[in-house]
Length: 175
Image 1: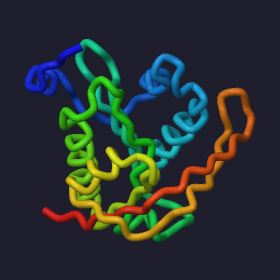
Image 2: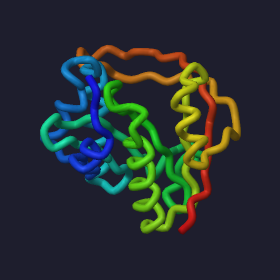
Image 3: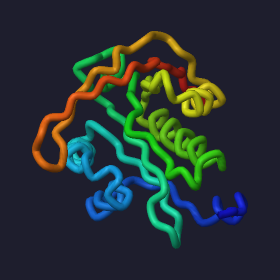
């Protein structure tokens, strides 16, 4: 399918997520396993500890997501004052390479600047070269290796262990 970039971007809105958006983040079941995570992030956003951004195409629905953690026990990632952490960032494959990811980063960075944050960190899988290049084009630099060990409770209530070695990247945001 060929999509005209100009027409595409004219029909995309980047906005905060609402509760009714959560099922669409599962992308027709592909990410159903993250249902509990999405609910937890949404609850964190209501407490002011996180922000959920989505890219919505007016006729095709949600095509991208980006979560920001404002507060973390790992202060080098998000300390609630000047440092925030981006995660859960994805664009549906048919829409990648069209500037939507860069637009989402720009919106999130602008919002964080307004909130007083000056540094953003994120982790990117060592195997995801395309994503790393996206971040580098947007001013992020690799600052450390991350073991990439984490776990989550899936939609069936089972704990899932993940091992995904990553690079931690950071950016100092400014106006």
